[in-house]
Image (cartoon, rainbow, N blue to C red; front, side):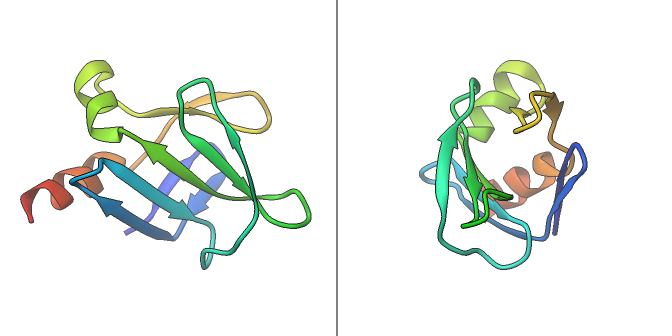
Length: 94
């Protein structure tokens, strides 16, 4: 399953229901720097400074509170994350 946020597609997605943390990467996960967003998520950047992933903190809680999960991208746009509802729901059912 993949997620979309703005122009980015995250093909590697892992959700940990007990901690309510979702890891999304463009391609395979790799080390890099991170930057906190206003929504308290973390943008991950590769060694060239390109967005490589996002760590979503408490996506289930944000879904319940706001009806969707939003993230501020490096370009400054705040966007709704597409596909995250199904990932969280499927993870909670296990």
